[in-house]
Length: 455
Image (cartoon, rainbow, N blue to C red; front, side, top):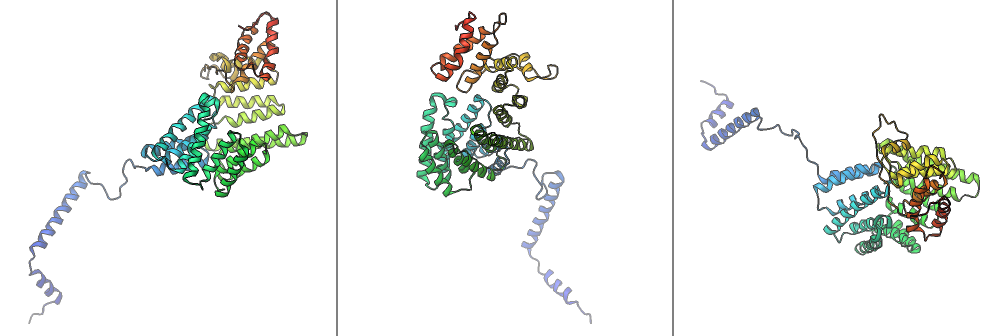
């Protein structure tokens, strides 16, 4: 008797039951597998989880990069990242508002009025777009207050400055109506109140902001600004230090700390205290220089601040060296030529002051600018300088240029011909100012005695 294996028996039993539906399914799977295999061989089908050639980033990823760059102190890269975020998500009001906020702070790194004006105008455009998208967002309104307040400088916006300050106040009030706990709105409102010379109200608002949230850099920055406006320079330094502890690579804070120490040095009544304060100022300016070198930012402001400190200390040689470092970074900036000319004038180096101030006031050709920069004419690119128009910002360059020309006038050099032209411009716009009149009158008399009078 033949024995049958139970497993084989079971198989035989199942196999004997033919199922047409199962046969169709198996055939379809087999055909599908063949299709996938052929598609893979032709390159029409990629491996699972294979990375694509151009991965797509979301807006939030760029925003996070922008925040990281801001914390690192690299504001240009922070702005670039936020612009990418806005490009991907153009209707995101908060992205636009944060971009505007960073652009405002970036304007603080400008060395010229035109550059600062342009950066603040870009911030204004972006915050207006943000408000158009989300007019009832408290944060957006708060940042609008900041943007319009910084645009309220008469040198920035001229006749629009008063309207910009009003707009700033209205946005701050609106932000607080929408959210009374908004610490940024309280801080920015305090900053506006300082600019309106309402110091008591400014103090009250910044104190409330510190109670609401003392972890924000902006709150401590404005607190420092309020204290500085009240001439409480040591208290201002402490607030700026707290802000710097939150964003340790944000160099404008170190510039502010250094400037307050420099002011304390200027007001010191004894030599020991004065030296101590000036050295502290130089320490914080040097810290800004170090940070900029580490992150690869070309920022002339710390060098210009160092120069002003050495000028106050009476060390004009070192002051001039630091202005020339700034000029190496921005060799086409007329304002830096003006600052160098003023340093030379204070050092009584009048021969060097004249070409530097000429570049700042009326502009100069490539040969003169190279002379001022002490460049190598054979290897360095020739740079012509466009002069700066007369304003409260450039006034010192104009009257210093006129004064040094008059003082250096001799028969044959005809310096007074240029001097009377410059001094006439100053008198026309600022002659009613007693201090300015006292500065330019002696120079006008020198040229008058030489037979030259204002045109």
